[in-house]
Image (cartoon, rainbow over all chains, first blue to last red; front, side):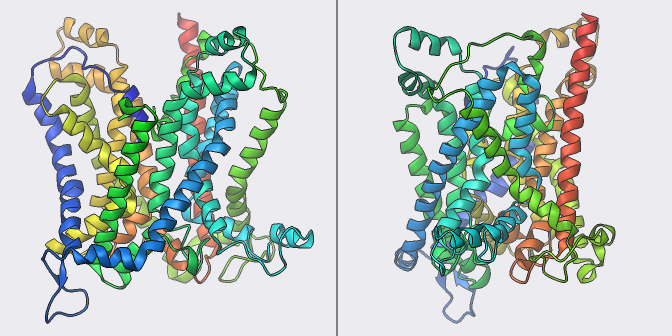
Length: 303
Length: 299
């Protein structure tokens, strides 16, 4: 995902040839596919979000209209879910960054002398990808359940109130989101840190900067592309996720996010306009946030 | 390169650090102190990996649990679940697993073909609407899955298409294409044009040059992209959930049975897939290292 990829892999066409017929042949099927199954669905999502219930219809039957009231209704009904989505996603992104930066620094900078170790550690970072996302989350649910060794020990040590729970709380949902998206944060960070020219750091210390200042003024700015790519790769899927917050996984009744209500409205309540309006709100909010964030971090060229 | 592409590179065994092996034998980089001592970062790394691997180990261990129905409390060790994976619930787990494999394979073939063609066009040709096409390829990766899933489902509903295996494949192909383009594009861009020129100098027709020179050289990138597509499709739940109707896939099976407890057989399948992927990646890395050694001997 390729905020970074689009920047680094954006090469000037080599030997630009003018065989536009071949280019058209190569592009047309794939682009047509994306227009049909990506762009058009977005349009039908917008149209659906403005539908009104059929006058004599059954549940789940709607007519095309310009019922802007749908948007007001969903914001009124679901504003806590909207806030939760962005709050949880933000918390998970910050935690994942704090967790991943030292890890990526070790793999990308300190382990440069041992390439074999480096590639072994990269395999370990993506290892969670090889096991089902849902089973991973369920495993944490069981490891951190009220009867589990960890929670009973914490309670025995009075570090946790005897009647407190971990699963079902916002902390559990944020924990799950953080865990599940760590590889998305670590890999782009690794990619930029791997290319970090250590002579810049030496220059910093030659100019009498202490290690902390070198880190703040040299390392961080040079790894900004990785930080931006990693935070976006974590934030976007986390804001739309509904598995972690689901009651059967790490969440509870009070931790439902936007994804949960979109799912419930679309698949259970058959309230398609509400689900569509929520989806459009989620997507627009993410696009605006991403735009502002990328602008403020000074990495526009990544897009 | 981004996270996914990096993952693809590791999957395909062509991570760049590996490629640079030969060029930096024992080049010592002056260690830079963070002021907290040099042992802190390695210790942290070990702890971080333990943390990352805990749920995987848990899932693996509980695939040997002699459980009845739900797989929560440890009831003793058995190989039984590994030997009789399909015996539970009339083979529901295996049916879901089979569906996931079929969907993954078909979506991978279509997405890899279409994506490779786009990648070739993007690097090799100059044409108008280039930035519009880049945006169209980028947007699916920046859109939350729940929006992609709901959008497609709204479209299928509007057109009146019944949801089945085909709609799942159509959905998976859609989100895989962009990842294929990004992965293959990097490979096309790094091709040495001199090799193709040599092919043309030797009177190869454009088709011959493509199939005997360009395509084999692109193969590692295409393979990495295909593996990534399959992995994305196989593990997708959110988009599948919106577009699957009554069809079950492995992730969907887990989601639905989560409320009544997952049978240990699901752990068996997930563990087997994990081990298979691990063997694949390690084999790719080993063969890469062997090839690099052979090349070093030749030169």
